[in-house]
Image 1 (cartoon, rainbow, N blue to C red):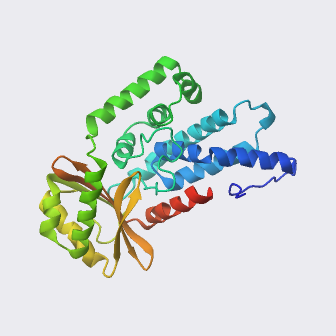
Image 2: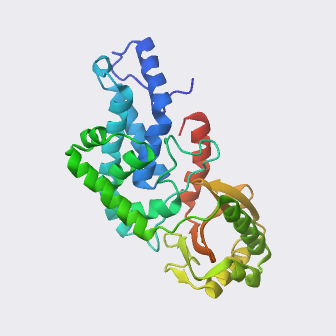
Image 3: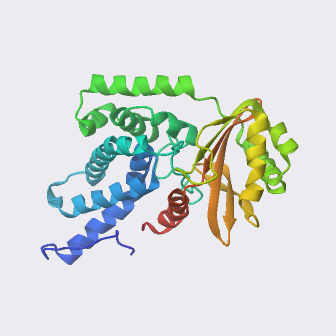
Length: 312
């Protein structure tokens, strides 16, 4: 089997058969652990690191005394993710331009280990990032993975009443800021038409698909030529979207899946150079989310490999 990255027994104390069994348990739970960490952090790279740290902790644990490996590893992963989220806030304050969550390829595992698809849509992940890490974790564990409140309280080392309040506050915040999604078929049809118009540089066609108050966000972390401020309005957003044709001459355009929704992938020589997800409302596309930062594009490409093989 493909063992977790870094599988070692530095002290030579573990029985090989027992260690293989521990690795099998971890591999089975890995999608859920990644799903928890990813939703809390909004980052493939950080979630991968958290899962790797959880594996190291699992190796060093007296496993014979663990009655429920799933609960133990979920608790370990959640606490590690909260710690990373708290330190990540400082790093993101120094980010140049909008910071957007890293996308995951969800074609292989549509729910990334979740009981439900909650907190996977980009719009939800963006709102979650406005919550503090403990609120995020409480919401994710309840809404995406359907953990009972008493288990969530134990994981977060809080009382049940406090835990319920955290989840309730998160729900209200999401309800206030998130628009109701449109029919999935309409979403995909509109995105496919957008891809065709962007590939042809057809500004008029692009503008007709956008709502009047559409906003475009570009995550480039200071890359030359990438807008560092939000771009608002159908005319401006249409022109910028059409400019991708000149910004990436000779590139290939395709519709892919990211975070459970259709997205536009622009690639040159088989390598992603841009990835765009859109939110759609009653009046058309109302939000465009462009990922241009190379490290985040590589994270999306890795996610498909990780979901297929369980390896980083």
